Amino acid sequence: MSTSEVEVYFGFTARTEQRRAWWAKSLQRRPSIVKDGRFKIVRKERFLYCDSCHERYAQTEHGASIHGTDHILAADRHKKWDDGDWDATWYCRHCLKDTHKMTDREIKTLMESTRNKPGYQGR
Image (tube, rainbow, N blue to C red; front, side, top):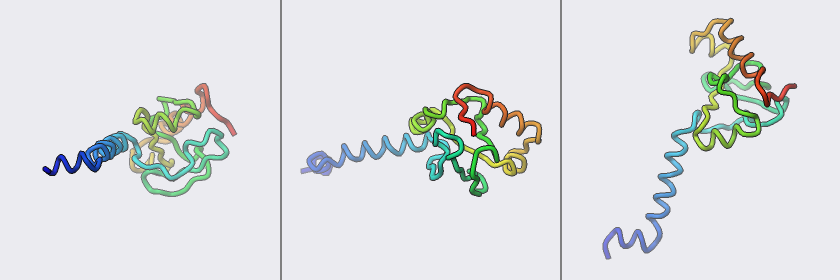
């Protein structure tokens, strides 16, 4: 038996294809792993870690997603991110200002753009 025949016999090729598909999908996600509450539907229940400095924040009013204008309803965010269709990267105000060189006015506009959209889950 050849190596490829053995792999097929034991199902390695199917599992390898599944792993490759999973890795390809995870590489499309931004950030690739989320270990906080940014996908919670109710805003008061969310806690986030800045994707730049990794500080923990209790609620989203301490920062914003760079893609805040591409608003996704709170209930749809996790699926859109998981499918690689939405960039869920979130930055605190400090990192928006220092790392991304945004002015206070730009940060305020960005943050207001996410709060004035349909589906916003207020406090």
